[in-house]
Image (tube, rainbow, N blue to C red; front, top):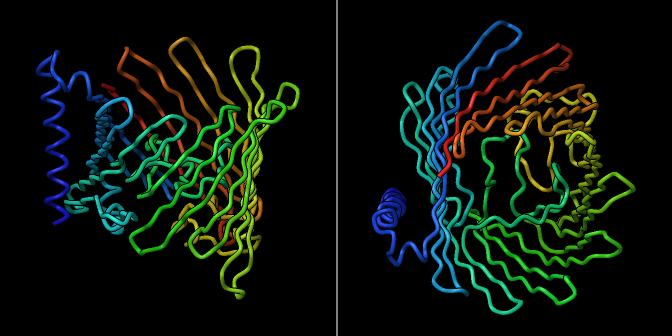
Length: 386
């Protein structure tokens, strides 16, 4: 049944693309918006033992928005990936990892074998949105982003994302209901609730306002087995941008400890168009000094409660524009309790209006279980957008 549903939605996507492009004066041209991209990314990974592994990835995305009228619209977002190479052959868990759809409806499909190639397709956006006056509502698979901070979002209850997953710009979505009310003074009130495949629920109420040039928000709700209370801010201290978020989790069970997730960052814009950013993350449930993190790092699942695997994480970023059509960024993360650092440099160049090339690296070095470790991962990517 899942295969039939997925193929049916694929046919809708591509039939719409063909129909829209076939007649410039058609109804579809006036009511349907299409965009997306095709990427090719080559990856090389190496370790201290001199082992080098490769992986190739073709990545296609199509976003479709059907505007019924000025008050109602339906959005569909489809993600297709084909991957192959030595790294795919060696990772026996990759197929089961890709075939993981946490939503109440399973809209993913995985095919192929590790020793040849793997195909992964998922409908990660499929929702209806309505607008009337100062009210807005939506239902279906959608992204609900409550984060304010640039990197670590403790308030992002519904769709927390992994910082190293740079190739997924759209970020994951949730099967949710969302209602928003905008007030004349610029304040807003938002109620959202999501249900997942295991019947777990995340539901919360958020209120946002502006005070003395600061954007502020507070929230409260239910986060799986916890009650959550939190808030965030974004403003300036002299020439520095100042952002932060706090979420406090109180479990239903008294046998489980309460926990906090706190992130703070500052950003300074330099005169030459570049910027520098510093930040810190505290996760009460994170690993502390002396922990065995060999398997913990490999199995780590990002959530608002645990944005990084360790209790403390420091961040330093430097980036900006190199020339008119090129940008760069250097991100450094350090986890002091486990003496582990991540260095993530990147550079991108726009070759033409719809063509971009990028080079990324994710390098890990430090001490694990008393032994030095180092992993280097390099990515070369070409992207065509339409």
